[in-house]
Length: 256
Image (tube, rainbow, N blue to C red; front, side, top):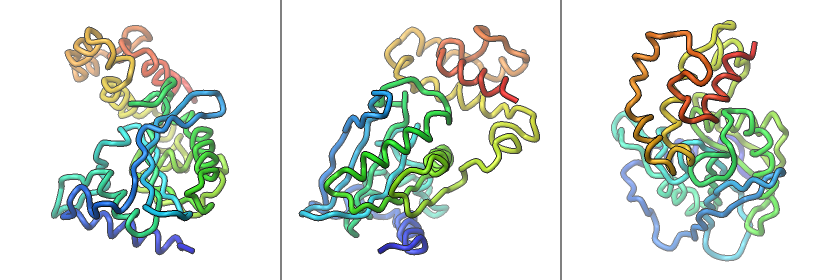
């Protein structure tokens, strides 16, 4: 049985081990990439599972992210080693110690299906993902979650939804307690960082990545110039080219 304190200590050790190569121990486990996990509405989310070798059941560490399940995370670095450690290296650290590690692209991001709506789908999707994990032959029924910033918000969402099997959570710099007071609004005033986040991340949306003309046009936009022209209008904003991002941005901005 792993306590929250033990889980935190293991994660801290992984973050501090930045001199490890991208593959810590050859043959420590097997990687199953791009498993398309179905959600309750039929949308499938791209998922990677790093599983220890041999027969058995193990506790699972889950991270759900909109930033790419195979890209380095900003949380796995230190002041002495500022280059982030790759997700595979972090997974190997835990796999070698008897954990399964699961990374998943959030809905509508990178290799996952569906439409991205910031924050609002993460409760149900996180719940359904935990439910799926518990059904796998390699899971011993215990799930810990981890992640920085948005990945911390995703943890808070699945926790609020009562996701099954979750026994430990490591929320780093995220997880709303009151988004009206901080995160989306500050005492009711809309945080413009939500607009810059939408603009910067729209480039990575599957729709924009498939359309070279839209991608080039989005890259050419001067976001600073747009901030000189507030207020914006729907269909006349720096994220108009990426409709799902403009839609959720407007929904956040107009919700009181």
